[in-house]
Image (tube, one colour):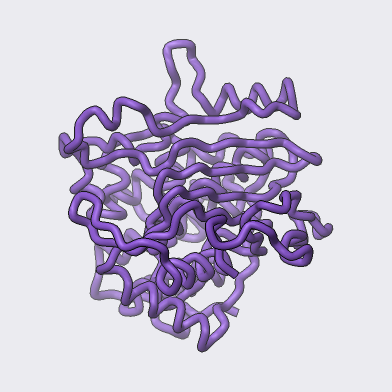
Length: 371
């Protein structure tokens, strides 16, 4: 079924219901109207539907700023289980380490290249000064403390606590001044994020001026649902649905072969499914510890062993993320060696699977395969 409202407005009742188990195992109904986008249980299904739609049924061929692309307008979809945020697609070779690094970069309110470009050097070309990112550094706009000692995110959480039915829990990201310089290499793709506390669960809607369906979509949905889950834990409520709205959903022409390979692979063999882990509530201090470990591992100042005393106090959810960064440290510092078996054993099966397909020289198939 097409994803864009320009193709299809009314959804069948079965598709509109989009029921799936919530975090407590109950059935959670996708509370959408009859003109809403399609609903999918996991992001994998939404991602594949978007790629099929844009590569096979696009509406326009564009070439903005010299970047040729295929485009579909006004695409919307909902993921009813946002914790299932990572697609396990061998042809995609998703970088699960970068995904976690970007989410932490946002949560820490940073805009520097020193951290994020370590995991994605290509981002350096979007920096005007070689030191920072502007439009792409969503965390600095969401989490950085202002002169009043609070952040956008802090104010939204306080608002939701005071008025659970509020429609004002909106966090703008793109700023009007970004368009002042036509040569600006880094204009935010995200207009804003909205949190809606309805039916006792926390829903999120992301509003995009544009979504790169192959690369940006995966990264954005991972980070935004990570932030949604973080907010839900602070509020003490279950995670609801995640909805993504994009004015321009596009695939750049150089990425078409890759997009088609992903779609073909999924059509030939059903992607594996790994159960997502839930972020723990009431563990606010763990985030600062994880950020300290990320920096130490990125700078190769120390190694993280599974039995490391400094990890003992972390919740297993956060401890496993530290071990992801340790695996990355080994891969980048010793590209000709296999990742230590003890490190791999400390990772969830899905994360081992992703590392094995991203770095097969360092994580052989028998260690990268999940269950």
